[in-house]
Image (cartoon, rainbow, N blue to C red):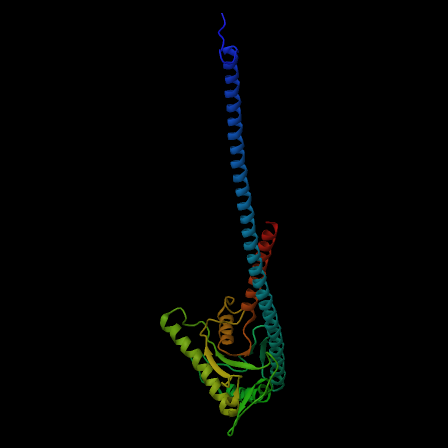
Length: 314
């Protein structure tokens, strides 16, 4: 038996069914609304992440540009440094050529006087052999023959060195001239040497150091006694160019370090090393250090190029 709604005249089941469908519709609308809200939140989060990524990309781009600018500045500094080093190396090459010309002049004039000399052009050394200046064992005084040879040496030095000297001191003033880069003498070392005798003991080694210095000083005094004008020759800093040094037996002539067996051969090796060398140093620094710096700049430029490529790829 069916029940009727007195007011509407419709069956009660139809009203229940209608209420059911309204509830389902409301629920679906609610779920759809929630889904739309979630979608909007996701979209907002995605947009936020995108904005942050763009901002991060912008910041990264700025940082990369700053790095590239620093790389450019360092690269310019390295280029400038390389240019300066190359100019300095060119001066060194000029210095080497000037020193070789000086040694050639001295060799030619000394041999013309009958003095036996050897030239080491690579190291700038003029070696006065045992036939030019010879010292007896444990002695630093010059023999009559050696003293006469020093006189000849002094005369040649007085003629040749002024051409390679920046300044000359006179009684009234110091006269200086401008020479080409590397053409001015900085120092002429008068170097005294000994043989190896006694070097194996502390007392003998001490004596050899003293003896080599005494031989250099004796040669210097004799040179300047024959030619006082040598003391008037000055380098660009207006310091005397003549100087002395003693090396004991630490710098033997190549080939005499381990003489062949036999007393006579050993004596000949010892005589050769009881000698005087003259080492000529021009007014330029040694080139080895500059070449090392140049290699360093090459390595740095390689690293900078790698940084530049890495920054560009990003």
